[in-house]
Length: 120
Picture (tube, rainbow, N blue to C red):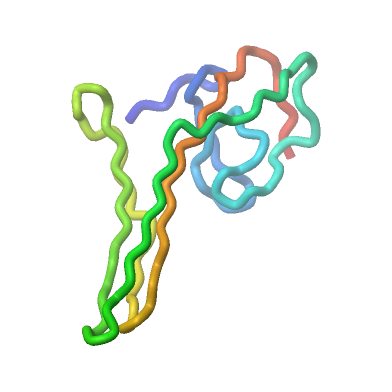
């Protein structure tokens, strides 16, 4: 996966708080939810993120079974079906009778155009 040039749509950087790779244009880190800028650029419009995809599901380990292990894997593919990103999100174990709920959401914002951003 290629990283666009700084300042262009899709450019990334590292969150100074949690070290996750995030969009350069992010005002709040989607991983740790820390604020990343003291102020918005001049003339910025505060467009709310749209969420075109949100999936939530739960499963319970039956009481009469042994412990289960799980791995949550996220895969992103382009329109040709080629894998462009794959990440292990989390692993764990569930004892009999335990339940886990997983939520996947995709937030989309218009790409920022030009202008310098103030970061801390």
